[in-house]
Length: 123
Length: 107
Image (cartoon, rainbow over all chains, first blue to last red; front, side, top):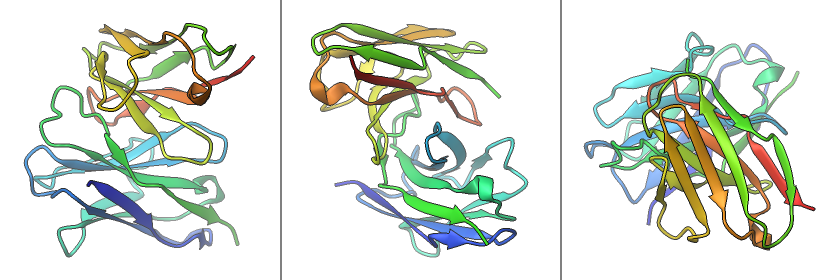
């Protein structure tokens, strides 16, 4: 069974750096074609794609946030990290991680999502 | 970045109705278009991938079509559990982008 779960601080102060962890099971990020994405959703608003890391360590970022974002694999083979620097109240959102499965090259659809973690930015 | 425009932004319908949601890309994305359903307080759920392929476990009343820049999601006979928000998602190129969502509620 494929599962993902996000974790990190629920509250951060403006200007701080947010570090989120996506811990997954049931698949390997070393399998060719597999990717993990980060997506966020401010309260009452639409989904916003943030970043993706591929099995071969290739990385992609949101154009508007790329100077603030870093995605990386964790020290073990079951985690992906997301760092967002210089946090602002507009970054308040639920943050999700989601998998693109291997062999999904016809779609790159995200087939399994974590439940999300809510981050509030406030002093 | 590729812009995705969904319409309508909201829709009221009744159980048993047939509804269609459209999504337009700002440039051709071939069939790299996916549809997700999101219920309040929950993570999105993949319904349709590659424009018209039904994700495993999704009821057959959901269908998708289109290619290039214009896409549709159709629900053939609305069920009570279908009232939710729907998002299209282009995965043709990074950065990926989502539509602004279509909120479907009960008339």
